[in-house]
Length: 372
Image (cartoon, rainbow, N blue to C red; front, side, top):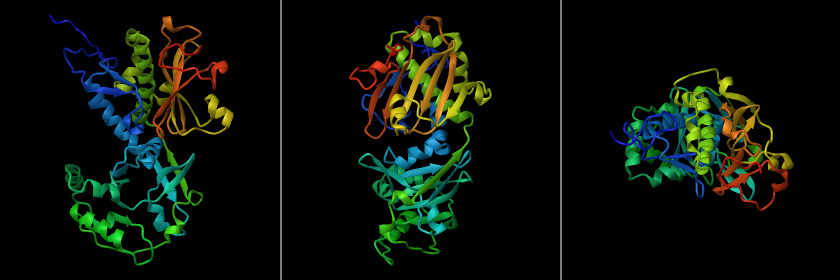
């Protein structure tokens, strides 16, 4: 009989049954890359990582408020944006006085410390998943024109009808069709017989003015989105436990329910797992400034015998997650930790609940007992 070396912290399968070659990112890569990004190596099996989590994260990216924001920042410089529109409704109004331009997809960028909206040349393909759409960024398409990605996209778009295609090309003056013609050529290369319909123009100098752009996104948090939020909270706790050299805590039966929920083995009412939602500033820096930070915040803390997690992406909705009953050895006054992940500068900042150390140079690493 061989010696069991590894046991998955989620499904409890061993290295006799599954492989452990992949890295599990504490913060999903879709939410940005970070310097010295925390990853869990050797504790999450490839089956959970690839067959369960990847599918959940793709759905999260394409069908949640946070996923839309992620794609508006285009953190991975992708050539395509996909919005399913099943559990959310997103509308954009650039203020050009014509509903035609409400179909455009905005891209976020930073001008110093200020967020700015850009309108980049793009092709919009409707009826992705019946209710959603795909946005193809022209500059990104040009970069992959001769690659396998382009051919794969061509297969994906097979059967797309011209009536479901819109082009927002960008022009320096009315009648300037250079970008438009380039986009049409790309569509032809993708196998789409595009027939140009009504053409509209608005001056370029009216674009990229954030004060004109109104973004309205509303959605529901259904089970799969909740599973991604819960996974981030549990991953963060797991990474801190491993750093603390107490990985055995992760197999405590008190944490079984949250893991079964994340894996989709059980489907309890969402309120049993994500116990609260709000949009209020909640970390010291936000409360002091009375505004939300753009970064992602993840933390865990004790609350009346329960192990609680809290997660927010892009300074949007705060999720409070019940991870389980607090294991006995963690019932200490110093238990708890939190970090801010800034996807714009790729930095990670430790948070502390000790007011005496807030704003100091004390470095907060990853561990279970940072409330000191």
